[in-house]
Length: 227
Image 1: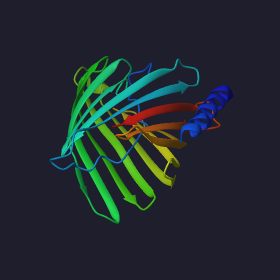
Image 2: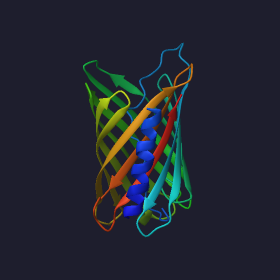
Image 3: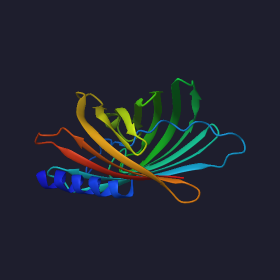
Image 4: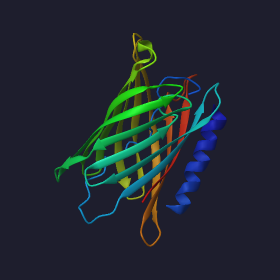
């Protein structure tokens, strides 16, 4: 596992220069605050995130997520998130309020298809105060093939925005498959970002490490763009 941590650290520090093979759910590591609803004159806002998973004793894989937001409408497409070789399509409603304390909530409903098939309900929420943000992405999947395939998944994250281009914090993922015990993984992350182009596109690179120092350590390398 040391070679993966070395590889992750190398990629992370290089980014400063430009300042499941299983059917259980896969995380969406980036947990940004749901987008504030745009005004009627503002265009659509998009984001594309690709996460690379390095898991001890397993083959690595990629998990892309694409989102589109306009006013209250939130649309999202995922692959390899609810299960390996499984896609999902989501629609939700953006709510946001507050100034000093900024709240944002996006309740969603989605369809899951592929190796896992079902209907899902989910929610993305965040609370921001100054440089601190607590966010939570969660969902419950109702498997239409077998009730034993139902599961709940949550990704809580606490972020400190140290600099405009640097953030870090604590993260966890909770998985509860039907009639099984709750599985919890905990870890930390470090991320960097930079705005590029005349019409700024925000590029981000984040390294997540779960269960560090154990035999089940896993690393997620995330590259994202918002435009």
